[in-house]
Length: 174
Image (tube, rainbow, N blue to C red; front, side, top):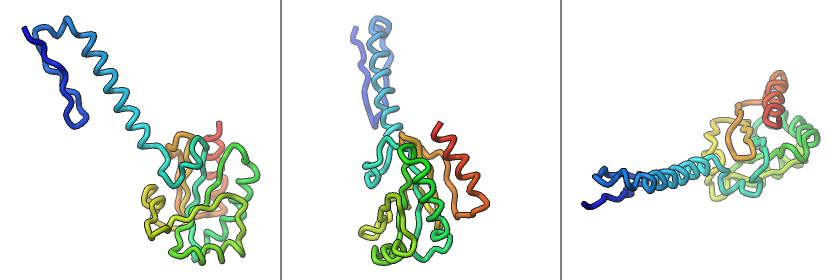
């Protein structure tokens, strides 16, 4: 009697029944456990940070997408500076600029200085981070846990909602 062996096709393990399946059940379970481990690792890595943010791996991040022409973005920078100083070492604030030219962003930063990290997303007009996080308007914010999972996001900046934004941050840092 010939035993069938598991076959792998498109990342799915198909275990074909056979008359000796019960004698090799332990081997089948071990293969299934290995497959599930690989599958779960792949799903987990999907939540990981995109390549442009790898330098921040393992940190709780507050990503703020902004542009030089965005008035609410200018209003948010003093609050972002406060966040940075208040939660330094616990929360990393990263402002992600989406201007087509870096010159516009630099001019903005002269009048609205950032005490936190600034990344530029328009390299080769790719906007990879804005696409990855499905940013539809400015400003937009995404709060990520240390594994890169999205905990909270919002569009716009309203002083009246600062308490709501900070409540999400406080919960993320617990």
